[in-house]
Amino acid sequence: MKRRVDVVVAVTAAVALILVGCAKENIGQPVAQPSTTSASATPLVTTSASAIATTPSQTPSTTSATSSPTATSASPTSHTSSGSPHRSKTPVTQPPLGTNVDCGKVACVALTFDDGPGTQAASLVRTLTDARTPATFFMLSSVAANNKAGAAAVGNNLYMEVGNHSISHPNLTTLGASAQQRQIVTSQQRLEAQTGRKVTLFRPPYGSWNGSVRKIAAKSGQSLILWNVDTLDWKHRNSAKVVSTAMSEVRPGSIVLMHDIHPTTVAAVPNLIVALNKAGYTLVTVSTLLGNPVPGKVYSGR
Ligand code: NI
View 1 (tube, protein in one colour):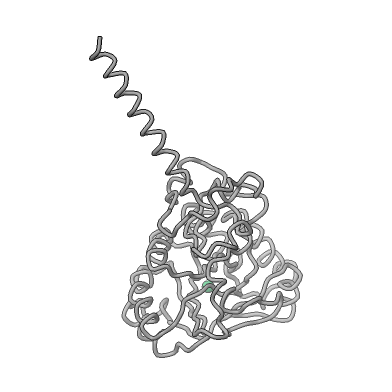
View 2 (tube, rainbow, N blue to C red):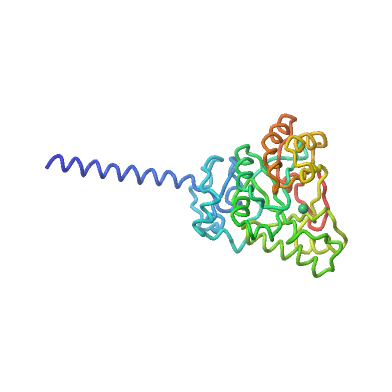
């Protein structure tokens, strides 16, 4: 009889321990809305799909100060496999990550990745996150539609910023106003649905724009973002050259153009981050670099 009691006690204790363990894990859950985290000094790395869709009133108050960069809650694959709705109706505005950096005082550089999300987007996001390095992804909404996991990997990670690079990469100056509208605004809306993030940056394909493009961008709340460091990664497809080209042209306030659809570029990123940090640069998103970019205004750096 006593042995049986002991067994019951042991089982009860084990269940209690498991419950405590679960409760502890829940403390590390990410915070849903940037507005609830603005007071936290510790940057958040990753938010879960469900967290993005959560309204502030549903957010447990205990989570806001406790998340650390290592408190990664879910991998991109788990978002897609669970089928959970990362498509929040109200896209999340740019999170507070990096907003404590004053690029007027610090030598900032923004890394940008175009034409994706590429097939290696999730792994690139992990590399960037491990190095606590924010970056901006100018996605094609047609590509994001075919790479939902990649779009989610970027959208669910609060180090990353989502920018718009049109639906299908046309030269906008060859199009009429209604076709431009579709490439600029419909694409913006699609990307917001695909990533769950608010999109306020537009990079015109080929860096090609005109007055009509500016007008449409201004009306839809998007700034035009060009670049002043071109790694020409699409041309040479050489990782070492990506790093050397970037390092020879970079200066404080630079926006660096790359393409995450090329494996050679993705492979170059760890070395590029090390080189830039060694040279004293702080890596930030485009929005942080520019402060509050004005819709309809054209920027190629700070
Ligand atoms: Ni492009």
